[in-house]
Amino acid sequence: MAKCRAHLYIEGLVQGVFYRAFVRELALRTGLRGWVRNLPDGRVEAVFEGAEEDIESAVRECRKGPPAARVTNVDVTWESYKGEFRDFEIRYF
Image 1 (cartoon, rainbow, N blue to C red):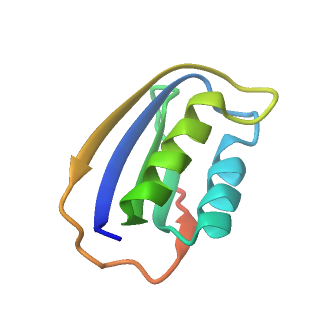
Image 2 (cartoon, helix red, strand yellow; image 1 turned 120 degrees about the vertical axis):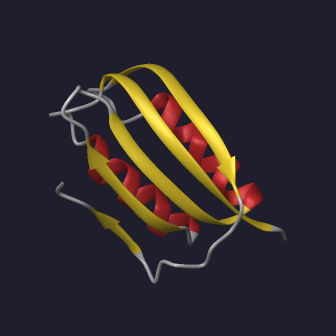
C-alpha cells in the first residue's frame, strides 16, 4: 500500500455539528494520522496521512459527514507523505 497525504477543506454546515469528532473517529478507525480543525470562515480543514486506499475511503465519508452536517464541497489536495504525525488530533487554532 502506497502511503500518501491529503489536505482537505470541507465546506457547508460543518461547524457545531460534531464534524471534527466525526473526522477524528473516522481517522482512528482507519488507522490514519493527522489533524482536523475549524476555520474562522466556517470551513473545516483536515490533513490525513496513511495508506492511499484508507484516505480515499475517509474522503468519501467526509463528503457525507455526521447526521447533522450538510457538506456542500470537499476540496482535496494530494501531497507527498511526510510521516510527521504520531496520531490524529483535533486542533484548536
